[in-house]
Image (cartoon, rainbow, N blue to C red; front, side, top):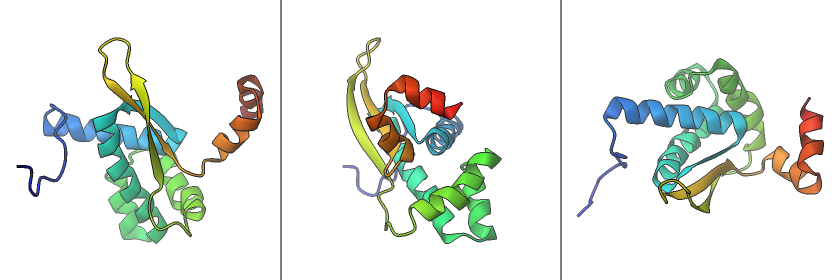
Length: 137
């Protein structure tokens, strides 16, 4: 039985697992969308939602708590400014996990983890990819 088991070990040593998840959360918050396997996405989702909640609370202590997970200073600023304002009225559920089929090399179950209410998603639906790339430049 799995009573009171807190997280998935993902067949990795603790230091490797935490470093991988911290990098995934940083990439998710930076790009607002990542593609990975389903178990990794579920674990990264937990950390990402916690970091966004810390960003909403604000304050020096919460910034330092978020720095433990998000090591990129620019992404940290984004969490405590842009994402804080975007999710001010939302009471949780900042991420969306969509199944993406199976990976070609090893048939691993792939998922797309993204932030809800992304401004790029709304703009990309109405435009072609080439136009969206030209707007970024």
